[in-house]
Amino acid sequence: MRNIYIVGAGLSGLSASIHAIVKKFNVKLFESSNLIGGRCRSFFEKKLGIEIDNGNHLVFSANENFYELCKIVDSVNKIETLPPNLDFFDLKKKLYWNLDLSRIDILQMLRGDKNLIPQTSLFHYLSILKFLYVNRKKTVAELVGNSKIFQTFWDPLTLGVMNTSSDYASAKVLSNVLKKTIFKGHKYCNIYQPKKNWNDTIINPCVNFLEKKGCDIKLKKRLKKFDILDNYVSTMHFDDIKIKINKEDLVIMAVPPSNLKKLFPSIEVPTEYNSIVNVHFNMPESLNERFSKKIIGFINTNSHWLFFKKDHMSVTISNANSYNNFDSEKIANIIWKEICSYMKIDIPVPEFQVVKEKKATVVQSPSNFKIVKGLTGLPKNLKISGDWTQSELPCTIEGSILSGKQCLLN
Ligand SMILES: Cc1cc2nc3c(=O)[nH]c(=O)nc-3n(C[C@H](O)[C@H](O)[C@H](O)COP(=O)(O)OP(=O)(O)OC[C@H]3O[C@@H](n4cnc5c(N)ncnc54)[C@H](O)[C@@H]3O)c2cc1C
Image 1: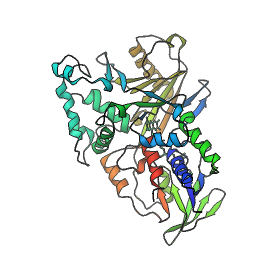
Image 2: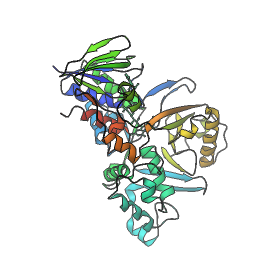
Image 3: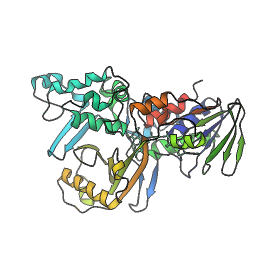
Image 4: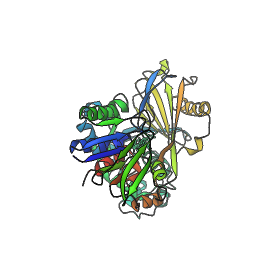
């Protein structure tokens, strides 16, 4: 039986392992840390006394590879499906509005009776048509930067989907997302959230599936070096073990680009990253029943998205490199003030924890996608996987899972 050695137990490595096991290969999975899940993980946060996710991951119902993986590992019942109906709050203009993609009434909009976003008309939404055909070199700001709904729609959407400012984000990749979601209809724009947390919905079910099928998962095993012979990987060197690799075996590297580059210094990979900061707050008792929506979009604020969870509140700041050196107390104070302004409350900052993911995603610019598309110079019995290896999709859970599956396609 062919041996498949997979390095990295984030979602791409888990997906590659599961698709390899389904194809009846002999799979060994190696992870350098003592946790599975990589950038999508949950953990018990001592200070808050609850289990939290590192970040507020959001998945669209259009993400068929995510759903397929949940079906394989029998965790579809752990997904909560929210309709594409979000509340927004503009702090500067003190405006509140609701965007319900399932109830767009073009006639009402034509008559000017109702609009999706305050102070706009139907005409302003025509900027979406520019995404039908997009030049690969263009950024989102170059494509729709002049649109009246840039600040209230295109810019927050780009940050949310691509963790990259519109000035740098690839318009082509955002266009691919729109073609799979909004252009196809509201059924593809539902939002998947974990009923409890992401460990419970996807990570643990993947691990349970793999263990039941006999996959050997080894934690605390960092791959340090390869030996290459005739352009094939011949040995993998971990801290304390060496593994001989045959030409007909397959090695799948499911690691971020900076980790791959350490092993293959001559290859060209994206080197710029954007961070994401999440501020998790214990839920003050007096707020328990005060919200009907689970996700709120913030405009003209430091906060981008506010998530109401069962036992805590959590705010996401995307494209957050400028916060990397801020101390956590300062970030929490800034964000709590914005929440108070939105909720029209005046409550002291509850217990909080700030999670900074400094390498949350690579910068998703036209030039970085071009580098990924042209990546060469790897041994013949080695494939790469990971969110960043997809040149047509943003760095997301869907992209990671698809990239793992693609390694097993031929
Ligand atoms: C805060 C945050 C919020 C996000 N929000 C969303 C969202 O809303 N929606 C969405 O779809 N996506 C979101 N993402 C992106 C999503 O989490 C990632 O795309 C996905 O988790 C990446 O998975 P991966 O397997 O490609 O990489 P990783 O999760 O980085 O996994 C790589 C693994 O390889 C291991 N490794 C590295 N080097 C070695 C080595 N030499 N030897 C052995 N192991 C090694 C690492 O320890 C790691 O576990 C978010 C990410 C973050 C950080």
